[in-house]
Image (cartoon, rainbow, N blue to C red; front, side):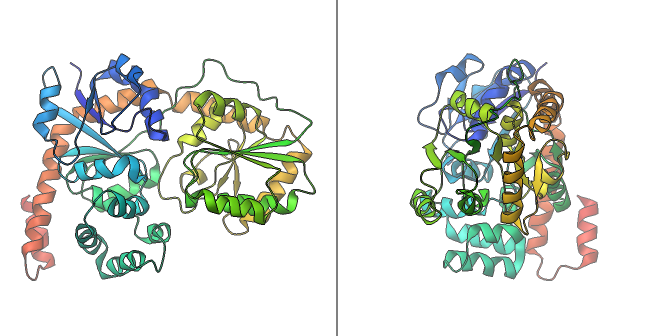
Length: 429
């Protein structure tokens, strides 16, 4: 019998890679599980319903019985809730995850930007946020958070020390992540069972040719949900001095978090004639641009445990990417991406661009090796089988997590807990 899975996730028409990730695996996921997809969006691409039912969710009021009523078959209703770092798509899911036992699919460890935007735009209570920061990170964490609330520092900087993913764990039955770093971070909390699967991506039917143009402008691309940690300003700063030396064109495809600052940067570095800002583009247009790109910028800092769906798309196009030598990106084989250090990032980037311009074939082998890795390790069928296995463990995981939560609640009521009391309680539970 297939496990009953309720998949709470952004779905197309949402312009986020998590929506695309869900859509890409639906055929295999619907084959491996008794699947229902849930969204809090007002509108969605009805083609999603070709694979499974899609239901509308109210994150503030939906109860476990609502999931049970919509499922069919025997066995427990297993809820997977996807948490990323964009408030527009995940603020509601965060509220749901804090009320209902579920398996958290943790796409980012560093979610402070989402948390602050959720307070600002989605009604997430500030007092709850401050209480949770104190609970999980102590006085230092609370003070650091209050500095951001007072606009004395940025949420992205706060994430480096206090990533924020702990705020999703209290009612979690288990956590699924896509990188070793995130798996280890969750496991170290000792709060919930942790699982890890490689992020899936459906390869195109045929691998594109790695032959890029050997003359004309050097084709550069940056794409995706481009927030402060995607290093776009640093890319532009690196390109500015090269504009008289190298003939290049940079295509920026995706939503940039601050278009006014982008315009200022293009003017500051004199790049208006070399950069085209497309905004969000359909996937076929993006894939076509990647198939022509000599180099794709996929830099991150801070990076806190997230795998990159963008990198999988780059590999699918057999394109060469440059990444920051940190986190998940550091763990990638050296023959699948160009890596540059954060320290000395701009001169390292300039040196790489010069080398790629001098030898337009430099990234061909890199792109083909990446494509091979994509096909071998990120297959949606492998991922769907893993989801079904995690769902089968839900009853046992939920019981363990409930016991751990009861222990935390009991310890919190003890005026002066001792290590002996702590150990005795843990042993009993």
